[in-house]
Each structure stands twice: as C-alpha cells, then as structure tokens.
Image 1: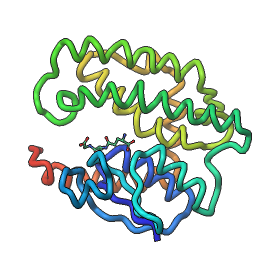
Image 2: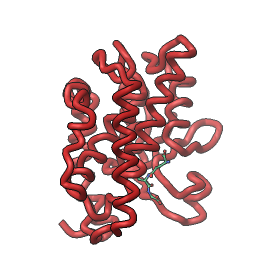
Image 3: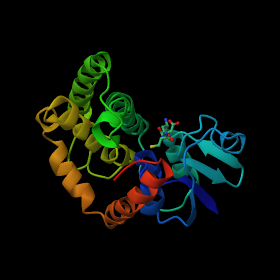
Image 4: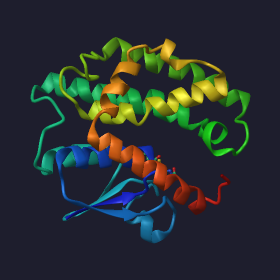
Length: 220
Ligand SMILES: N[C@@H](CCC(=O)N[C@@H](CS)C(=O)NCC(=O)O)C(=O)O
C-alpha cells in the first residue's frame, strides 16, 4: 500500500493527500516532519515533505508524486486525456508552484510563523512575482468552473493549496488584497471547498496545526 509521509499543516502534503482522497485510494498516512537526518534524506533527498513510499521505492516533489498517482492509482483521472490540455494543466501547476507558492513562502515567517519581519529586499522581489503569477493564472486559467475547464484537475489541487497562502502573505505583509489581481479565485475556492475531501482536509489541518507548532517549538 502507498504510504504518504508528511503532516497536515503542510500545504504540499495536502495537495497529495487531496489527490489520493479524490482518487479514493487506500493509503497509509505516516506522520513525518521535514528534516535532514540521513534516514529521512534517503526517503526525500531535499529533506522536504511530502514523500511517497511506493512498492518500488520513495518519491518526493509534489508534482512528480501527483503524476505517479495518476499513472498508478485507479479511480477518476485528474488530467485531461488530450496531450495539449494535459500540458496546459501542468502549465497551471507550474504557475501556482513557482509564481504563487514559492515567492509567498519567502514571507511565511513574517506572515504566519511569527519569526519576525523579512527584509525589504525580499519583499521587493516577492511582490512583483506574485503580481505576475496572478496575471498568468488569470490569463491561462479557464475558471469554467474549475481552473483548467469543466473538470477538476491537479491544477485545482495545487492552486487550492498555494493561492490562499499567497493571498495571506499579500494581506499581512503587503496590506494588499490579492483577489483584486485574480477576482476569479473566490468562486473557484468556494467550489473546491464544497468537496467533502477538502472539508476533511481542512478539518485535519486545523487539528494538525497544534501538533505542528509543538514539533517546531512555536508559540500559540
Ligand atoms: N518542492 C517541494 C516543496 C515541499 C515543501 O516545501 N515542503 C515543506 C513543508 S510544506 C517542507 O518540507 N519544508 C522543509 C524544508 O524546506 O526544509 C514539493 O513540491 O514537494
């Protein structure tokens, strides 16, 4: 059986968990926090979560894991069959990952973890990337009603766990309402949040937050 290594406060872990749950897959949840022990690096070479234990060995990097799940797990497909449409979904995944989640992550400390302000230099480099990232998602997303079209895809799973973090960073760090850049996001998030799988993940995340703060020695 597949084993998902990670923890519920991790947005990347939640992308993979959503894929497994939307597929109706049987999997084992293994609570692991990121780290740099030799034991963990053998499973996830960058020391990050999530990692997936498969019958053939471990995999890391969320978009790679999502592709593996699509290729090996029965259940509904979350990629279009058409090669161009499939590539478009991957393009949208890249936009969320590279130009929303990753730049926003540079400000997570100030926005969410109370670890003090990030430098002005970082802020000056993050803001324009978020702006362009939103513009790219807006330009290439279809929002009809899902991000890539009429069906839910992996692009929705990655967006759902990237955009809200970017919006939180924008609000808290920049006093900037990111929904002005991407007004279509609100309806999409509302739709995705109706999924019973997402409701379960939201509940598990709230529960996992306390455990996460303890593991990382954070207050609150
Ligand atoms: N590129 C990775 C990013 C995963 C990631 O950043 N995970 C966070 C938890 S949400 C982590 O493990 N951080 C610890 C670290 O960066 O050392 C992926 O796609 O899975």
